Image (tube, rainbow, N blue to C red; front, side, top):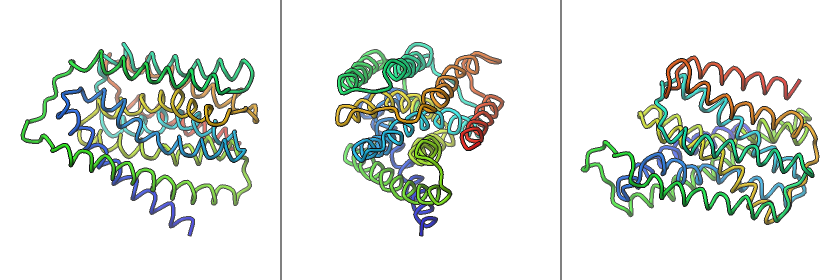
Length: 310
């Protein structure tokens, strides 16, 4: 039954990612907003919903390691697994916003989380409000600064009616949520059967499970040559995971660090994956992420998973 849940979850997530992508492209046309903004707001928030649900439920149920490890592990998987696979499939051109806003914002959010946990091993309710305020400020800045940039080269006849856009958005989001629930339920049950800890489950099984929406949306975007949505979705999801998911979770229930391996091992991998993106974008060809970079990221992620279980 658990394997059936996993298969059903994957199917829902693939379809959900496709529907969400249609809504994102349609909305960018209707509202004359650049795809990178849509990717980093609408798509990122929708695909980060599973992390939010899992983290809130885990914190309230007394499993803070799952709440925190889910986000840290998801951010690692987003770059190592998702971007790695996407780059292996298709070479991607990186938009200039990567250097100006996307990557810097992700680095600031990542080190902010590191600093907060290093300070007292807890994300308090006050710190949760600060996180949430920062994500709101970031989204407002992003939309204002990029709304008039990037002309979208898609024929006007492909413009979608607003009711269809909202329909794809709602149905796609629901499919992503339902698919993640099925996948997590099946995967966690299988993992627990092998007797691994909450932290290990969180940074690997649960993290990959909640990152499947990002993987589905990004792979579909890459296949359809919508690389700006693919990159924006991943970077935006990492920012949302830290500031929005952990922020909202901490507001509802403060998150206390239990397993020190999260701060002495896992979070360093998260910071490492975030930092390595810049040299990969600059070398060997500035502004592009190629297959070699994808192999490096995917190989590093496999090493992280191996060391986590070792």
